[in-house]
Image (cartoon, rainbow, N blue to C red):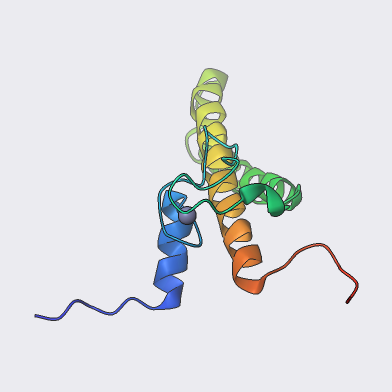
Length: 125
Ligand SMILES: [Zn+2]
């Protein structure tokens, strides 16, 4: 039976979820929880040439903040739990969503920069 074909969207989704190198697909993008490795350990692609910046952090603050606020308001209005329930639920959930979201957003942006050959403006010789 032939393997199901994977389109570019599936490849990008997999690379974003797993932190894969945009050039060779090795699982080498991150060196720690949120820090990019200096270069790919398998193909040598220099990750320092890409500048993802603070865009993902600002976006995620808004998105995660909105999700958590809506959930907390819903929980309070539906069940009226004691305050400690909110602290136990939302602090770890916010942490997980921010770290997971930042990893995926940074991997996606670095992949997009790689695919579009984005970089600093240069004058032609
Ligand atoms: Zn690589």
